[in-house]
Amino acid sequence: MASPPVPGFTCQTNRKGNSAPVWDSGAGRSGRSRSDSECNAAPTAKSLARLCSRDKDERTTALEELSQKVLVCLGLDRPGSAQLSKEVLLHLLRLSSLCPLKEVRMKATELLRTAQEEGINVPRALASGPSAFIPAKELLIDGPNQDILIESFLSLGRVDHLTMVMALHPAYLSCYQRTQHALLELDGPLPCHWRHYIAILAAARHHCAYLVHQHSAGFLEAGGEEGWLCSLRHAPTKLRSLQTLNKLLAHRPWLITQQHIQELVSPGAEPRWSLAELIHAVILMAHTHSLCSFVWGCGLNPEPDHVGGYTFQPSSPGHLPRSPHSPAHEDGRPELVDGEVEVELLMKRMVELQQQQECTQEEMVTRFERERSESIPTALVRGAPPGLVLCLVEEPEFRYEDFAPRGEQSPHIMRAQDYSWEDHGFSLVNRLLPDMGQLLDEKFQVVSGLTYHRMAMHEDVDTCTLRKALWNYIHCLYGIRYDDYDYGGVNVLLERSLKVFVKTMACHPEQTTARIYHAFWRHFRHSEKVHANLIVMEARLQAALLYTLRAITYYMR
Image (tube, rainbow, N blue to C red):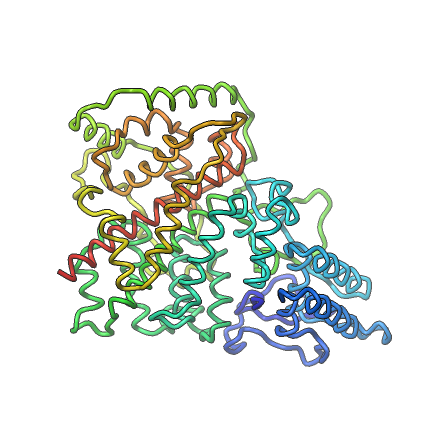
């Protein structure tokens, strides 16, 4: 089913258009309003959804009907009567830029051009592509990954920027979409609109307007009340009771204890969560927090039909709008200096690590502690998030702090041998939320084994040691230690600029900027950097889940 445009904003326009959408708390549950003069023949959500039919003939018929209805609204036989709602204009804008079906994309472009010729003020996309960091030419809608994009369009009703970037790794995208669908749409203990609202609260912790807008659309489409999006106080007490767990999961999951679980699920808790409901909510929050890392880490631009992704103002010559990921004082990519030499050196180190002798257990612990306490600066702190996001955050000053800052006593390290996903977390999730453990495990397995046997300009390369170093470095930042892993390899393989990017993306994703993205792996393909982002995202997700699942396990004993 096709998703509606961004909810909660007035969606009416005429010849004059609208330069700045505003939040309309009185627009009703759906967040869509209708102009008194709006054309009665305007395309409906149902007719637009038929463009996603798997039947090619039905799509052709739907496309022709769309064209006819738009032309009727433009009043080609009645000069001066042209009118189209903002909702339809934004839908056409999205189809014209992001639909993987060429005939639909071309027809939407043609209809927008015709509307402009008839005096309608049509919107234009502010960004030139899905990402502020990755050149648009590397993310073409009709490129080598078109088949999986077409499948996404037919299944979900739209192809968004996140999907286009993830499509650089089709095997991962497929299992990600299965997990996302199960979390948000399939049968489960939580109502669908609650699921989207929990995801909204999770995305707001990292100031991720991209995901807040996306889940706001799903929330309203599932029947949620628009008032909940204006302020937390309008949401049910039961949902608000998740806020402590939400902030800990987002920023310091190692602080989660069985006491936090008991306060939500014990017989005396009011309101009380069942364990099945709570595990569903926990996975939704952790999933969304890690997805925020990916959104910020890949520099995703707002969708063309989302607030911040379009404008009704004509473009100014020479003016290039800046992405929220690129502050005014930051320029683009730094000069490539000795890039080939860096790659050759990294490959040499990988080979040497595979050949070196094992060190003692004591030395492994020492190297872990050295890595964990290393001071890695992160990027600049951004300004206040948009009001739409801030109104959904309690204690916005609560942020990530190092698991154990240098010189301070650390919390207890979680040894993977004592509590792991494979031996403990997987079975607990599958028991409380059937099939979800399998879906998450598939995602972890795919991202861990994902390889194309290449590195920058080199082919036939075994990248296993590098991928493992990335995964274990994230878990190290979160206080998780593998007794059988030599953390000296992390320091050897991960250059400082990569550590800065990875720590920022995993711990302070909203501070990720173009400069730190371009500073590491300067001779690597962008698809390889996206691969690294996927590893960081999944490692972060698993780390946060492990702490919460351990607390649930202790409560259940």
